Length: 450
Image 1: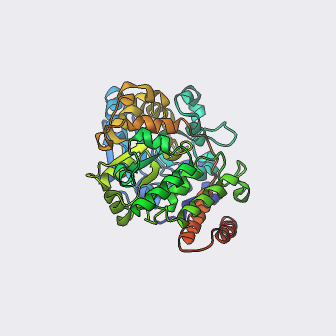
Image 2 (image 1 turned 90 degrees about the vertical axis):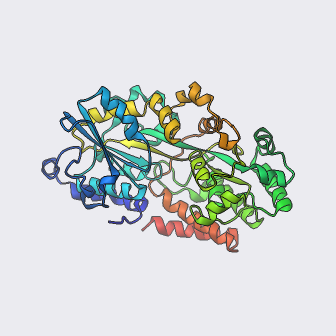
């Protein structure tokens, strides 16, 4: 099953789930067991899951069998081996697949009323959509989450809450604080100092960023940034409001900072400061390796992408982003209400996502911690990265994370964002930015009213 756009499709999730739900007795009869041991067979007729996607830990005779759905590579099964050794009465089955299939399968299981796991990750771009189905999740506050709330960055914790603040959907995992990656060779070719401290002194504001962009373009012929999306994202995420208010009413035409982010990005496009290398394309990766642009405004997890695309390009360095930090990425681990082992699942999650294990996840997999206690641990504070010239990049990411403030996004955030990015593509193709902005507003109104 391929979902229609999850962000827009989840707008009707509450209605869909209610229609599928029936009475509590009917749901109980429809379910197999709470951890979906039977029901997670292809996630209630969702996308196929192969044996290679599942890792099982613990004894077949364990008293408590937990299931855990994840996406991407987390390293959590390896971390959990220690927990299983200390808690032999528990076994855990981990399913790790790609993000889209993962959310498709979770959507299907919640809609069907059976087949959901005991624990499920939800990515930051998806979580507001799932909040419309509050009754399909366990409230972490009912399990004692107020005792661990202070371990996490406030803004991260708040993303996992309902608007009223009395329902906690999940416990935070990693985050994606944004920084400015840059190429020392491009800066030097332009006659600029490439030392990280000098670059931060040189580029403190977005006006500074554009001035340096002009110099680099004039001296090297190279653009400052890779594409409009990363530039717009970086500026947008420094605002205290986005596209919707907390009542999920569209405020796009009355949020000055979003329009400013659009205008500034459009101006940089018109000045040839921004290339148009589509993210995740071979051309984008090749330009990353060759140093075909000067900066990449991106989150902490992008360092792994840079190393993968450009293993020999050790000219990359990291500096703080102009005018503050932002965030791009992160997940929350939820407990679907179908679970028959919610307390045991919660106990495991409080161990897995505690500062000590978040440090290990950072060391093993590069997952940036959402628990600020880690930032003061010697293993974190003293870490250096030879690829980035021996910099302590973690410290720069942490500074960014501590600057972020919670911004309500809403379930149709992705729809609006897609139209703005389409608009910036049109500007790149020569459309007048002001005319395109009016078209964006019209397209957004049509899209969210469907």
